[in-house]
Length: 408
Ligand code: SF4
Ligand code: SF4
Image (cartoon, rainbow, N blue to C red):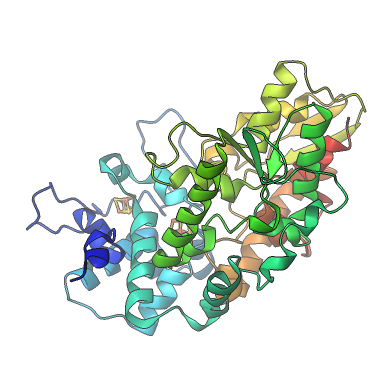
């Protein structure tokens, strides 16, 4: 084994073997205890004050077969790890229908011991990629990441076009300790409005910041969640190098999924750097009086918690506080909100591989939003905005950041 391979961090099921009842290893082995809390329609834990949601895992609710539960994903991976099963098309279907909503991470008691069911699913995807390559529906995403540093087959030279005409400073041309990380979606129809609005809001508040422009790379979301571990490490290292060289101390992201991925980078690599989603940053500006929304919006508005910003980062109140800071806004809630918010169906590569599941998931959420009587739904993730961009139950939808920038 050469030096490089020896130093390579473990990936695939080897990475999570402690949670696969690998009893021959030194650390205490653990794993799924078959409690059913991650998909059952009863309370998660009867001792909890807050009983939790009835619906938990979207693919299980859609297909209604036990094998599509988080528990089954864990057990199937365990059997592969112990050599009892091979990787079959049926196993792949189960593993790749996970929307990465992270609900099972929230509900599984075993997670107190470290990893949860979603971590095992992600590791199983890494195992499949290493042994057989990506599934066909995900191949273009991997190839694009390798070639263009983004999943959308957009040439790197076109990166950062979202900022054209805004007069922003890029890392090389201006000095600042704060970086606005726009994300790959900023150059796509569903992500542009949020990135542009964030830049306008920060400028309006007089905050100095830079962007990476054409030098920006994907945070690693698709590589992380689809099981392209080598790509994930490459992108992670590239991003870390960029901020270290420039001496950045605060990173503000426009998309909830970017926030989650940046926060999952190794802590020692991002030490001394504060990682904030735009809503957290803007909430501080409102509190300090640097940002004020003057234009009234007499509207009933419902907020959709993106899974990655909510369950992934624990950010629930900042977006709601910002909406309350806009005069005239009446904030209403869907029954499944905050920790128990229902997924949009857009994550985990599901729209590419199982579009019927992704569509059902988005429609189900849109129906719930419509039933609140809201005139507008806002959210703050490019992934969710893409999922909600069409559909029978669609109500007007807007990026929260854009809504705020129009309320100045
Ligand atoms: S992350 Fe969501 S979709 Fe995936 S297994 Fe867990 S609950 Fe199911
Ligand atoms: S994955 Fe966790 S919540 Fe689900 S059955 Fe196993 S131990 Fe229970």
